[in-house]
Amino acid sequence: MVRSRMKLSNLQIVALGYFCVILIGTLLLLLPISTKSGTTTVLDALFTAVSASCVTGLVVQDTGTHWTLFGQIVILLLIQIGGMGFMTISLSFLLLMRKRIGLRHREVMVESINSTQIGGIVRLTRKILRGTLLFEACGAMLLAVRFVPQFGWKKGLYFSVFHSISAFCNAGFDLFGEYRSIVDYAGDAWVNITIMALITIGGLGFLVWDDILQKKWRFHRYRLQTKIVLSTSFVLTFGGGLLWFLMERHNLAVGMDTKEKILTSLFQSCTARTAGFNTVDIAAMTGGSQLLMMLLMFIGGSPGSTAGGIKTTTFVVILMYTLAGVRHEKGANIFGRRLGHEELQKAIYVFFVNLTFILMGSLAICFVQNISMTDVLFEAFSAMGTVGITTGITRDLVPLSQCIIIFLMYCGRVGSISFAVALLERKAPPPVTLPVEKITIG
Image 1 (tube, rainbow, N blue to C red):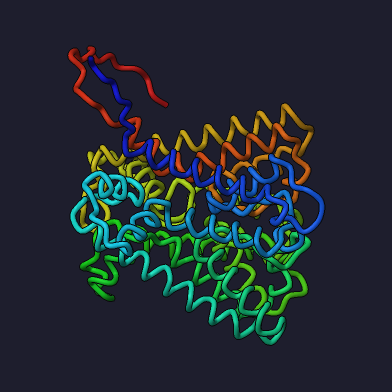
Image 2: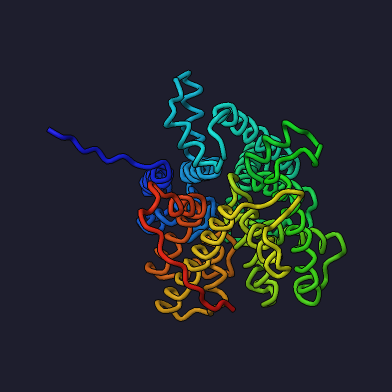
């Protein structure tokens, strides 16, 4: 008798793993112990579980007032699992239990964090676990300096730990109530800089950490990916902050002192790179600032990080090949290295799949509800980029629109990581190569 057994690919295991985490989180949030008063609908619990495990931050129920301590801890665990990756968590448990790490576990881990080689993946996992706990602990201690005097030891420490993990994992969940995020701390340099640092470190990527740890501050010795990630992150953060200030100087920045203008501008630029916190009313921003935020959300963080978006490397590869085409150069070069055509193919796929999902999702929501197109596009970019900032329409979405946002959040966390590689993988070369025929482009 021939037995057929379905064997999941590494990418399917990653996608299925996130699905299982979401399912468990939904069931836990449906328990009566998770809600302070009343009941939580299945859709609300599912939306929250997806948003937390996909480290997005969009909410239909206020995290600080709707959920009990148990429910908030469930959300925090989902954020931690989603930020580090469920494979990192599972592999860490196996290491703690001193279990043997098989080849299949290593292969799936490579896919999960977008590593390029299987050698040393267990060592890298240990570094990811230690580094995550270290940065989150440092962030919690820094935030405690402000929160403990304000809320007392017990609540202050809890708030510090929660928001440190939420910031480092680029999740954007907060406990301050009334969907205000951290607007009350807009002029607080200590809170702003701490959260921005956590967001930035979490969004650089585990592979970048490892490279910096090995080669210290010798930039010329870094891998090409590390150079691209660091330089692009710097330009997007400070360039985005400058553009935001120029477009808001006669709007939201009116009445702010110089320090608050700088903090607010940099914070909005930094948080748009998939963090989800905000220190100003997003709906009150100018159209230009909202468009800028959409572009930053679309680009997102870096590969193998806690952030979403198409990733900085995808953006740079497409940009460099575009510039090379304009200059009639045969290849795209950066930092003394040439970019491969395989990277270009993957970058184009990720770019257009993400953009297609956003536009189709926006079109579907506009078909279902009569909501401003700008607000819908902003919500779709935020969901697909796993950002979490909103103009305030999340709670006004009908069930079908919420399901569309749920789908975008899931695809943003799983699809942008692995679907490009899955589509471009070929099990065997085609037996016949079709003839080439030239067409007119442009």
